[in-house]
Amino acid sequence: DMFVLAKLEQIIRPSYKKEDFVLGKKLGEGAFGTVYKASLVKSKSGKSDSELVVKKANQYGAVEVWMNERVRRACSSSCADFIDGFRESKRKGKGDEFWLVWRYEGDATLDDLMKDKDFPYNVEQMIYGRVDELPKGPERENRIIRTIMRQIMSSLKNLHAIGIVHRDIKPQNIIFSQDAKSFKIIDLGAAADLRVGINYVPNEFLLDPRYAAPEQYIMSTQTPSAPPPPVAAALSPVLWQMNVPDRFDVYSAGLIFLQMVFPNLRTDGSLIQFNRQLKRCDYNMVKWRQSTEARNNPDFRRGFELLDRDEGVGWELLQAMIRFKGRQRISAKQALDHPFFIRDGLLGLTFLQ
Ligand code: ADP
Ligand code: MG
Image (cartoon, rainbow, N blue to C red; front, side, top):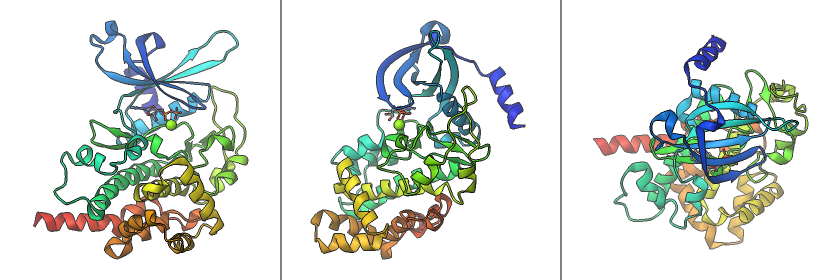
């Protein structure tokens, strides 16, 4: 049925080719390909005002096309709107190239927004459509961060529910959708589809070490090497055997939560240092907190104050996300039922009464 649906879609949906697009500004360049802002050539669409994003990927782009098509059918609101993916043959001997096309969701990734020293207040208008009357302070910051976290965790929950593990969750891969007025996940280039065993990461260095959970090496070094494209799909016994591969993403999302709460952990250097310190604390967040508080660094005080609000529900959730053993980490679905998020719902009701 899924197969028939895919076939039907192929027939019904317009299929594009590279001549249909005008490429604009380069938005990014990764290990798998290059990303451009783009638009459709005028003659075909009648108007050329629609903004698009095109990724020109190497042969492994086939996997990314697969992931995007699954997401489009099964949980489209969680990720950037995928329009089409197609193969283009390059010059002789150069192999194939895959083009992926999405709707242009907006100018800002969570990374861009977090680099602004006004964060999280710079996000308030974008997500609520208005600015809070509360004075600036932990309560207001907590509310904004909680909304962002809820959006990230519910997208993750949806991806995990269809058996997709993203494996590259980081602020650069979370985009603010102007239309949806919420954050969406992008970049399924390193994702694994657990249902059919499609999983391809050429080597562990392609997983971002800043946001990777400690089990990164277990996953990648034992992953079979890539079969010949265009299949580019490997049955991964490792992923099948792993009890809770989805918790890899939860760890990464926990690090994003941490960076939102602690402004002094937002730079690459400080995150790398945090990772080193946490490892030294045997991945025990309580130990890390003790050593941090012992050093009496005022930069951390504000963040702990925020996490300790409402009987420490934030601190509790953060600890549940950042744990060494995947099995002991909270799932995205469970996280959404955590008091950190529930409390917000209750406050919302009180507000309505
Ligand atoms: P890679 O990280 O492999 O280069 P991404 O898919 O993450 O590729 O895209 C690179 C950058 O392009 C993103 O960080 C983001 O800034 C921008 N981008 C990607 N997809 C979209 C989209 N749908 N709308 C707007 N910007 C996007
Ligand atoms: Mg990316």
